[in-house]
Amino acid sequence: MKPKHLAWPALLQYLWHAGQNAAVTWVVGILLLSHLNPSKLVVRWSLAGLALLTVGLLVAAVVRYGRFTYLVDATGVIIRRGVLVCQLTHLPYHKIQTVQRQQWFYLRPFHLERLTIETAGKGEAEDACILSAVPQTVGNQIEGYRQKSPTTDEIGTQPVVTPSSEYQISWADLNTYALSSLGIVPIIAFLGWLYDKATKLIPKQDVHQFENQLLALRGGWLVGVLVLILFLGFLVSYLSVIERYYHFVLRKSGQTLMTTRGYFQQNQVSVPQKRIQAVRIKQNVIRQWLGLSSVQVLTAGQADEHEREGAVTLIPVIRTAGTFGQLAAFIDWLPRQTPTFIPVRRLPRRYFIRNCGLIWLAGFSLVAVAIKLWLPGFFDDYLWSGPVWLVIAGLQGRYAGRNAGVGLINPQLIGLQTGSVFTRQQMLVPRVKIQSLAVTQSLWMRRSGLAHLTVKLRSGTSTTEVTVRYLDVNTVRQVQRWYLKVPAQEVDAGTV
Image 1 (cartoon, helix red, strand yellow):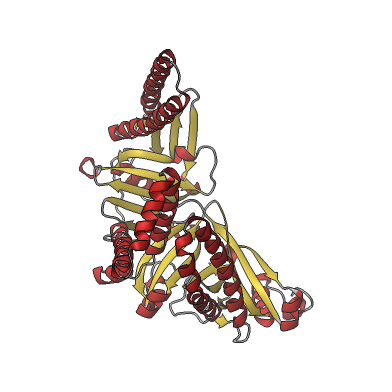
Image 2 (cartoon, rainbow, N blue to C red):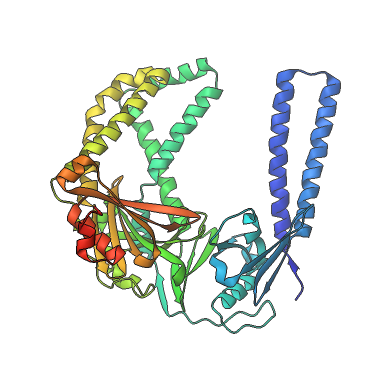
């Protein structure tokens, strides 16, 4: 088989990125020229240099496209790239962690898609694992080889795969999930950051005039502006969730899990079950009241660029009561019934409240200093809101303490439960996937019979730590015995 070039839309993408770099260069160059006030001759030569650089970037993009080839055969995926130095990358199928297939709406008429092939490592050849525009049959063939399905040597043969399990999200659950999203919080934080940056670019007299006008909006007008901002942030959050998980489907083919989702960009991710490091079940406090949960799996390698490193959304929303019964059909080492967690004792829960109070107090003080410096007109009103933030800190600490716990589900599976930022997280980790288990105990915690338990596991290209705080020392010893597989007396002798 001969190596193939990427489809023609990839050339447009290369030219687009080159044009972006050229635009940034022009903006920086023009700003420098306007600041330095050079002679007309220097300006002409500078503009000529910028034009020459733009042409060079566009030509380099064309050459980069022409030098990029790929080959899919029975041994793996072979990619050749490089403008001045040729770089050859071979990706064997047994080293591939996940395959992400993305298809923007403008690629659908041409039956093209973007393939991101992830391995356990991440090195200098990271970009070589991306095929920016290839026929859909290429992804089908890669999946066929990964599953060791009968395929021919010709690209275009789609392996016949019969799904053994399938789950499709309902519109009612997705709508409830989007309405209960807390995505408005980062949106409001972004607006605050944008305002801070704008005040540094706009003349100070204009900023002061705007702030004076804002202060003049008393009563209903000011409330109306705040409500409008919150509504727009909520609307953006709602629509982004709907677009991301539109027509979400989870399928299991053999030992491979595949998710498909998205409206403007259809995104498909496939994860072999043996590559899963842990299962994470999340609920914010609103979704706990509504009886909804989200399920993610952690893998080795960057599985999904829209999620945190190493995380793949397996089911964005599911009824909590049926979560484990549904998951057991896709991941065979999970229990079919909701596991039981050993909670933190009632008395040590006050330490969670104390810690949250100190953290919120530090944040409140920093924000107060910033408001005093940049928005002094709002300083008094902000101080009056102090008791409200104190109550929120106490509620968050109480929530964290009530949702912390650990459970030994079976001889090969442990469950870790934590609660932070009003979000409960249950992590189910197979014993063989644990990188290390650590126990932390200060002198005063030793007198109180408490200890922190930290489990490290592989996630993405690094590790993830899950810490359950202020557990009873006897519970921690039980977990140590389970992990080390040693008699009780050896652990009790001095490990904790």
